[in-house]
Image (cartoon, rainbow, N blue to C red; front, side, top):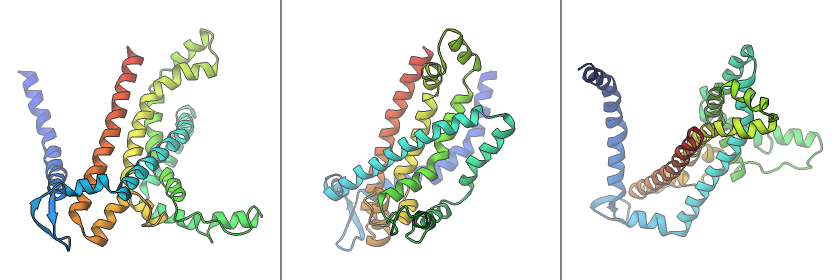
Length: 287
């Protein structure tokens, strides 16, 4: 009887969230899915009838296929770079003295309190031909003329890493903080040095945090369009930019919806694979 009351109580607490998500997330997704199958006339106006032609166009047109693979490649590269940079940062957060730990966390999270647009414009100021980076390089005689560091994929990846890095650091730091200190001590007492202890104890126990961070970073990088639009330009072969162009310039809404769902399915597949690896790893570690 008590368990039934608790379930009802938890259901009441959960109901507002489920209703909110159903109205403002699930219903729009259903409408977008229906739109992706609707036919259009020669002026891209939606007409009666349904078709698979939009998905066929996305999955068979060489330009769109290149865009899909480029989007996934950039998301993977961004994820790998973020994980490599996030690991030492997370180690510093966890191992630093308590009086400094709060400061480092504030320093890490503070960029998230700033608009992505503002942070991206900051990169434009830094990487422009008359920007700070080129100015420093020319004044130190490292280069003779300004480098073209904007409006290319390298600039997109750099900006992506800066925007996504905190999302990789926090899960890894959480996983590191859950490691009991006596595990490292026991490993060193049994004859392992610091390097061996890291690879046999610390790294395996932080793999779940790394996978969680990879899920977040990959999802954000694959679906972002503001950052590549501002620092890379609208002609970069990325699927979010193609969706943006179909909506704002061509006004082919069903094709844009098909692109959006294709991207969402691909991201879900990658997350599902990472989730499967995470479960297998936890079973291996925990037994």
